[in-house]
Image 1 (cartoon, rainbow, N blue to C red):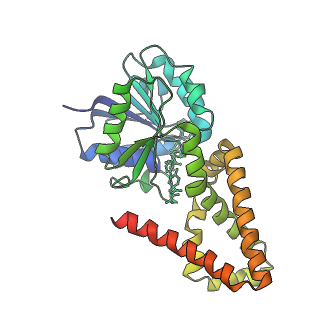
Image 2 (cartoon, protein in one colour):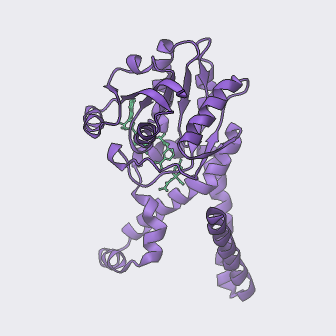
Image 3 (cartoon, rainbow, N blue to C red):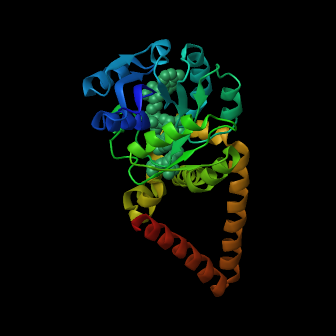
Length: 292
Ligand SMILES: NC(=O)c1ccc[n+]([C@@H]2O[C@H](COP(=O)([O-])OP(=O)(O)OC[C@H]3O[C@@H](n4cnc5c(N)ncnc54)[C@H](O)[C@@H]3O)[C@@H](O)[C@H]2O)c1
Ligand SMILES: O=C(O)C(=O)C[C@]1(C(=O)O)C=C[C@@H](O)C=C1
């Protein structure tokens, strides 16, 4: 018994191609795999990699699947959903993997045809790379996948999407939209904003200093800025869609930065040490939780 007769991935980039790779390995996920994209070069590559049974630029064709997973950038999710929904069949499920909810839930819910469910699910897994070559089947293993179904969503549809992610190796949890965006603002969106900005700060230095900074950058700068290599369109869309919550989070961060600056200015040894020690503790807890 497969979970779905057919599963369509729209946007087989890093996340979408990882789902397809996993579904290729675990034939309990779907009998037929469909990949759709607006970029012909992506479709050619998906064909070469043999990631799907049907590879198409036609969203109406992909919409006939029992489960449609939108893996396009946040800014394209609503338009692609609205284009596909009229072609979806009774009992089918639409899901997306967008990194931020913003207004997507209410906007897509109001356009749902009768008998079609919408169960977005955000895997807390990724890398700084993009495109079909960047994906891998184990990407979601032992990672959280956060489900954010709108109120009154059919529970059997929620269970099916939970099962899809479990078969991809993830652990699942259901969250409410705004709370999801608040959590992601601190654990994902703010760190990316800081990484982009510290690179920008380095880039704005005088020519000589910039060249030396990049030449001598040791692991501190490298580790901290890995995620600054991420896709600009993806992150532009995320920052704009989570604008208010991200700005509030940035204000808190700025206040905490000022607290550290004041402590350094005052030579307040105890406060500086305490702030660093709390950071160290958080990092150690993160690593311990991951190992457990
Ligand atoms: N990269 C991550 O770490 C990560 C993690 C979790 C969730 N996400 C979310 O997953 C989604 C995809 O991210 P990714 O990193 O896999 O991106 P990606 O750039 O690797 O892939 C996106 C694909 O969508 C296609 N696309 C863009 N607009 C389209 C449209 N209108 N119609 C059809 N196809 C279209 C692109 O051609 C591309 O193949 C985003 O919503 C992102 O927020 C990303
Ligand atoms: O590890 C990375 O490179 C990521 O950026 C993954 C990451 C994250 O910030 O943790 C990025 C966006 C998501 O929506 C989920 C995961």
